[in-house]
Length: 156
Image (cartoon, rainbow, N blue to C red; front, side, top):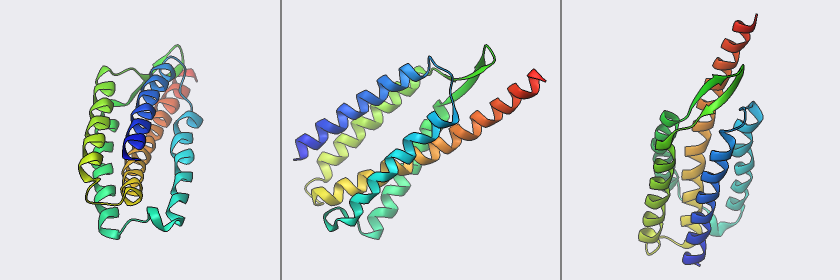
C-alpha cells in the first residue's frame, strides 16, 4: 500500500508540472486560480473515517510544514501582462522546487511509514499539501487582482 500511494503521489506531481507548463501559455483567470484548492478541499471528507484522523499535535506540524513550503511556491509564482492579458510568468525554478518538494515528501513519507499508520500519514500529508496550496493560491489571487486592476487603469 505504501508503494502504491507513493507511486500515485509521484504521478500526480508530474501531472501537476505538466498542467502548470500548459497553463502558463494561456491567460490566467480567477477561476483557474481558485478551483484547485476548492477541488482539493473535498478530500477533507477522508477525515470522517477514523482511519485517516490525525492527532492535533501532528495537525499543527503538518500545517506548519505546509505554510513553510508555501512561501517557496509564492516566491516563484509571478504574473505578467502580455498583450493586455495577465499571464503566469514561467519560472524555471518552480519546476525544480516542485520536484524537490515532491522528493522530500516521498522520502519523509517512507521514513515516517514505520512510525504512523498509513491512514494517519495520508491525513497528515493531505493537511500539509492543503496548507501549502491554499496560501499559495490566495497569494496568486491577490497578485492577479492587482495586475488586473493595473491593466484596467491602463486601458482607461
